[in-house]
Amino acid sequence: MEAASDSGASVGTASPYAGRADLAGSAGPGGPFVPWPGEDAGGPPGRPHHHALLIAAAAAAAVLAVTSVVALRAVHSAGVPPASQAPSAIVATVGPGLADVTATLGYRQAVSAGTGLVLTSSGLVVTNNHVIEGATSVKVTDVGNHQTYQAEVAGYDQGRDIALLKLTGASALKTVTLGNSLDVRVGEKVYALGNAGGLGGAPAVVSGTVTGLNQSITALDRAQGIAEKLTGLISASTPVEPGDSGGPLVTAAGQVIGMDTAGSAQFQIQSGAARAFAIPVSQVAAVAREIEAGQGSPGVHIGPTAFLGIAVVSVSLPRPGDTEAGVAGVIAGSPAARAGLAAGDVITSLGGHAVTSASAFRTVMAAYHPGDTITVCWVDLADRVHTAAVVLVTGPAG
Image (tube, rainbow, N blue to C red; front, side):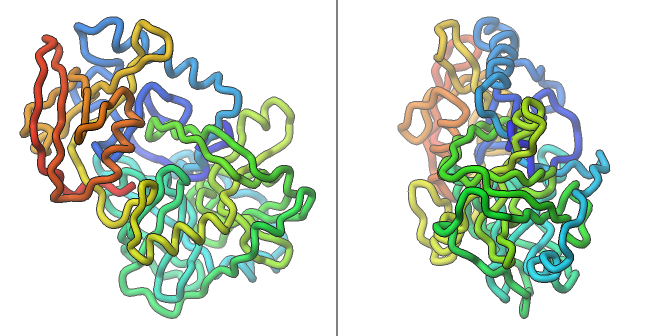
């Protein structure tokens, strides 16, 4: 996420929408958020007030948000150096319970790198949702035994930026020790560990102090084009880097009190001080237990992600504050393509729910599973209204 910096990483084909500060569009279970080959990234012609110029304006306005935060995605190709190593005792205590997460974002021809917390010896690993969002495959390297496993996404909570992974064939893994986030106090010494720079190997570790509790931020993921409001966070003066997303914020005793999700690059520029944000471990554990038990809820999605096969962007309308959900691209052979959707169309409703933004589209889609039938209503460039019942297939995670 951004305005804090991005703790996950994204590598691959460059896009005008790369990074959480570009809020013109939003990707979700409907499809990856990048311009498809042959598509105009700024939007199709024929709707001058609904597309290119206003998309750019929306992105510019979003960057000026007061508390924007950047999801920590590590960019492998950038060769970002890891944070300086801190006390070896912390690495020795916490490191074996961590994992390096690498997600292949096949539809975007990119790779996302982050960190995971090993919760069970049988291979349940929790990380940030933004690390695996849009993934067509996920691999996890356990720091404790150096083995790499294929992983499936057991479930996720997009609104709280938490995802639970299940490693295939894992056993006897070392786990992290969870502390009590309710006991955290401002001024307390803490350490942040993670896969800084997406380089793998021994986790990098930095130290700092808790600077705030119950913090709220707007996290921006440029790679996904998504803005998320995260609340109840712990802020700390630990300078986290890309690749640290999903890593632990720990006490001097090595107990995990939070999961790093964003670093405030904007704050650092303004004040000269680093600032990071972590999800309290109580929230992380609660969501992980819910997913493990298979208990879906309005916020928690269990199992595979339903896929329509389109990239959706929020497009500003002439009236300030009004947006619509524009189709930026359609994947050939997908359910959307078979139904006749095309770039330049505008989604008006999904499953009987009015859709006026990419985030609304994403929220509705999160409630569906592969095999479900959903009714899609849209308007094409000639202002013709269409409705189709579409059977969803299995798509990218998160």
